[in-house]
Image (cartoon, rainbow, N blue to C red):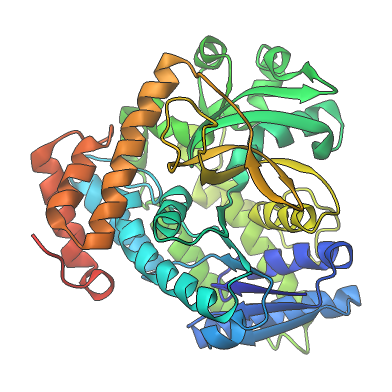
Amino acid sequence: MKLAVIGGGGVRAPLFASAALRHAGRIGLDELCLMDIDAEKLRIFGDLSQALASLAGSPLKITTTTDPQAALDGASYVVTTIRVGGDQGRVLDERIALRHGVLGQETTGPGGFAMAMRSIPAIMDYAGRLAKINPQAWMFNFTNPAGMVTQALRDGGFERVVGICDSANAAQHAASRWLGVEPHRLKAEVFGLNHLSWARKVTLDGEDKLAGLLQDPTFLSGTLLNLFDAALVQETGMWLNEYLYYFYYPEKAIQSISREEMTRGEEVAMLNRRLMGQMQAIDIEAEPKRALGVYFAYEQRRGSTYMAYGRPGSLTPEEADRQLQAWVEMPASEEGEGYAGVAFNLIEALQGDQILYTGLNVPNAGAIDCMQPGDVVEVSCRVDHEGVHPVKIGVIPEGQELLMRNVKRYERLAVAAIRDRSRRTAIQALMAHPLVQSYSLATLLVDEYLAAHAEWAGKWNE
């Protein structure tokens, strides 16, 4: 079996490769093909991925190419994880929004729209190629904003597409660690949209464990729920996706981010430049352990300040730099595989080797009562050899429903705007978003994003 990663020259490619090495035997994976249009990044992160395979003594063949046709040809599964416009695109998205007093986070609100504006046309092109070359292949989209990109793909008629996101399963994994049981023994009831979801239950042998955990201050403080006041968590009575922080604390988020010298995008861009310089100075083939030590130190440093402005006791970038320590070996367990773990577990279930319960981004198909059948939602699914089946959620609380409906209306309008290249529809979309809700502001944001990303967005209609 061949699996292709579109965007395989990204900094997370070696992490994906390390997960592939652990899962290859179980799913019959023979080739992992990394494809990217950036030849230098592909060389570096492809070499690091191959070093992992060599050190592990794995027979898995890891190949690299800049040719999409070569990558897609013969692939049974395709994972898309691209960043059109690179790190600078993210920096512009954040800074433009902040200049107008609005959150610019790359997947939420205006920043998410700007990223979708660049991502969707590119992913649609890859999906079209795949449909011609290999129509029976499955595409797993991790390109952000994952829910909106998946919605555009489904609206475009691509049916063998699933959106994946590790945050959809955060409640299940947090409960797994706390209870000391394997994640597959737990079933979560997740509902919402990508980066806007809740888990109302996590059951073990039919008994809900989440309700009790949400009352435990130690559990709350040791998970990403520490972003939220305990009173809010207990009042909601559900696990909160960490990105809900931007909706429940928008003014605090803007104040905290604005006080920082660098936005998260600028910090990540700085770390990526540093990593590239270090990697270019090392002969990876001759010194694989040294190269991997530098790489895993980068990952440790990047993760240490994730959403730091909202987490109590988080390291500042300067403190994280001082505490940085290199790792010298590939992580040995499946803990923390992120979206790669979601992808490989999904493959294993689709091949009929297991039944999987996991949160995915798929058409609603009646799962959540307040959503339309074709709306892509983030919801618990049962996956087996016959496909992906959303779990019936039914009626949800009014507060969650209203927020979901508003954001989904924004998503529908945004996808239509990008498809039709319509400035007018784009303004309507941002007006509909709960974090904007202003015609004048939406107009400024759309015009500035179109100007800033003209290379990628092209010419739009009025």
